[in-house]
Amino acid sequence: MRHILTLLTLSLALIANVRAQDNPFEQAAQQNYGGRFRGDGVELRLKPDGAKYGGSLLFKGNNYTVEAEVKGSGLEGKYANSEQAWPFSGIVEGDKFTFTTGTFSTALARQKLPPFSGVWGSSKVEMEFESTGEKFTGKIQFNGKEYPFAAAEQAGDLEGVLKNGEKSIPFTVANEPRGLIFQSGTFAERIQRTRKAQVNSLGMKFVPVPGTEVLFCIWDVRVQDFEAFVKASGYDATGEMYSLRNGKWGKNGDTWQNPGFSQGPTHPVVGVSWNDAKAFCEWLSKKEGKTYRLPTDAEWSVAVGLNESSGGTPKSKDDQVAGVYPWGTSWPPPSGAGNYAGSEARDGEWPSDWKTIEGYRDDYARTSPVGSFTANQFGLYDMGGNVWQWCEDWYSGDQKDRVLRGASWDDYDPRNLLSSIRINITPGGRLFNIGFRCVLVGGSAP
Image 1 (cartoon, rainbow, N blue to C red):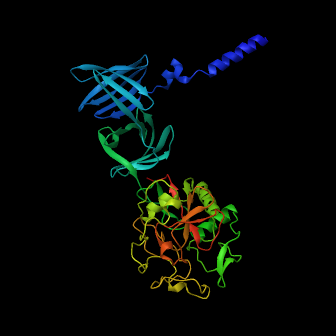
Image 2 (cartoon, rainbow, N blue to C red):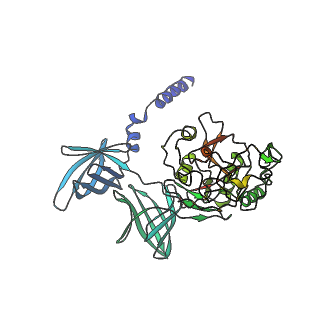
């Protein structure tokens, strides 16, 4: 018995050491000839048809039908027009398809469908994806009517049916070189990811920002929004906070509920940490059934109008675009540029050694209601001034501090008002000039 167990153990060990690529059955199972493959002047589409493949070929500007089957370690078949047929062969290695006919051979790349979510469409037809994965469901809007649909990827395209009453109508989203083409019957229309503004149950409005894959809230999270979160969740955000009281800066026992100055429900919440902001986003995500989070540093840069290089840490990009502010390139800020430390800030609480911006006044000594100043080109308010805004990212590689953007009502130094400026604070830090803004992932995002 012991001898048999020893042999069995050795056999299992040998089996475990056999590589998948050495097993012809495993190798055949891993080959996937179905899909669209594209190269220089060649496009091949193969669709499984039982044990064989059918499809089409665009080659040297001409269209052909294709029939093929797996033989040995590759694919063999023919492409034909109405008069003649020619043989071809192919070998797949991952997403690479080597196409050979006669003395001609070229490498084709597998074309993949985009990650469908949100809304895709044109001026004529619109597809809203409600669930994604191996199968897709949602609704199609056409000619003022709405039709539920179900679809799945087939040979590099999206194929499905929409329900028109009791009838099932087939459709295809073809992944062609000119783009994604929605086809049903004789109707064909190029579609692309579209953007729709959304308003959630708290009244927070989210809009698309070109160059990002999210929707930005048009303003900072308000006192009334954060208050709803605290009441519903029981979350405690009243820990130590730095504030200004009686002309003294420090821990004065203030909280987001009473930051040391008067606020109304539509003022931006302050005195909240990065951890507090993340907890709010998680709560809101569960409440709305969507994904909310803080913007990344890169997304925030796009939303403020900067064209920064990709890669690198926020620290490496800090203060790297000279003379560019959210309102333009002039100094001091023009009237109505935002809520900064103008002459209005000098009240009884303002320390005597704190400066203000000469020649500027905005009428708000502390925070202002969101939307009090002109929105930027993307419809976003307070991308400069009012409160500093937490971002998702670590400030630098040491992962000790999180990054904040945008400046606030107590900033006067021209450097701090630059669009490219970053500051860094520990995730648990709470200050009287720090708030945050949310973004919406998915939904109707681009």
